[in-house]
Length: 519
Image 1 (tube, rainbow, N blue to C red):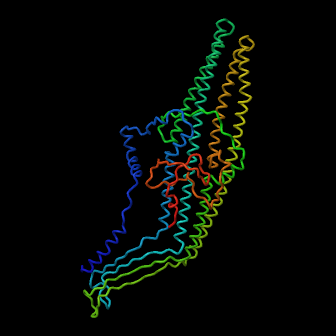
Image 2 (image 1 turned 90 degrees about the horizontal axis):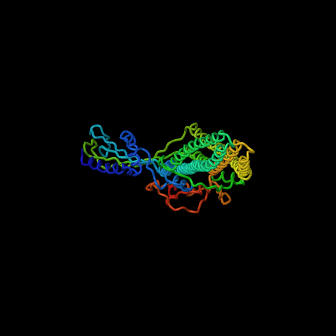
Image 3 (image 1 turned 135 degrees about the vertical axis):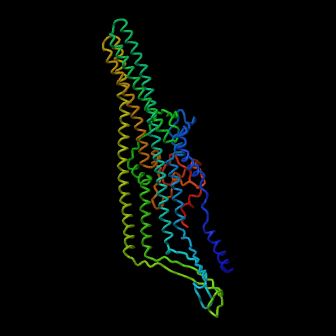
């Protein structure tokens, strides 16, 4: 190899080395996750506990907002959706960047089998080419990826709303079982008093032993009900622990609050808010915009893409056959383009994108109709439950309490038998449990209604309506920074442009605008 060949290789090698840059170091949390996966089987084999550790600060009665905030900070589904947003946001700079240039070096080391020119022998040719898409193609690709990123944001909001609903469903189920246990224990004291009356009358011969036995059987039935309720309470604790990502053995308890939230009366306002706030509908709208951009991109395929290049050929006098060799190197410029002549393929691409857009539009209509259906059903259910609570609280329970008092007084003077007292007592207990069940159902129904609508029901009069073309993700739609921990939560803000998740919101990253900037 001649000195010139060595120089050529020396010029090419640095460019190839710099072009093959090493990827960035893996994120610490990704490495930790891989380590945890590797240890999963080892924990089972070695007997190491695989459940999450118990956290004392979660034990004891807490309000529902406490558990909601904990779940928003640590629930794996939300953390996964946040990473999905971050991943999709990083697609934008990829699709808006040019393809890597191609460097080609052609060697002809055999003297007798290399190109010969009048200037001398050409043992080496170096070319650099770059593909340049047609104008606007990169921009439209970026707009498509941007809509996909916004779709990922709406899915993050869906995960947050679903987690909030799951927390409230489990929480109010837990509250019901706690309240039901308290009611049964309180009514058991009343039944024990009735048993004492029956035993006293039996000892004096004023009543039969049957009254005593029937009362004792009722006490045993109460104990059976308590066993069932305690089992259901532990199951509700496990459901809530799953959502807040803590140990299933945690002693999670609800604060029993008999103050019920009002049922929304303006159903038209719920329809209006759901159309503009529900993340599922926002996702469909962004899908329509994305498919419109894809149609524009398909039409741009009718225009050619270009390839430009620069060539350099080394010329040497060594082993040259020309008598007039000068040894001057050759420099060339290249330009090429693809010729989009296959119209059937291009036309099919446009028709495909048009049908995709129409498909997204029809899916939006279907989702909108389903949203209206669910809003209506949940409102009707909440109104009926509220009416039942009022009926039992204002009329049925007071009359049953009065009937129990009258029958107890009549029993003392032998006007009614003991079974009548037990029947009235049993009815009163059942009605108390039914009201408690209705209250839990009402809270759960309103929690589901909030998820369907996409915003807090108490703030509906203040919901700001924002057209989809002006949509900017609110604080609840969080795209985490690459170097940010999954559990970092910052200060809340009062600004909420869309009205999505105004109850509990996660911090918006400072570089949010740059995430969706198309270069």
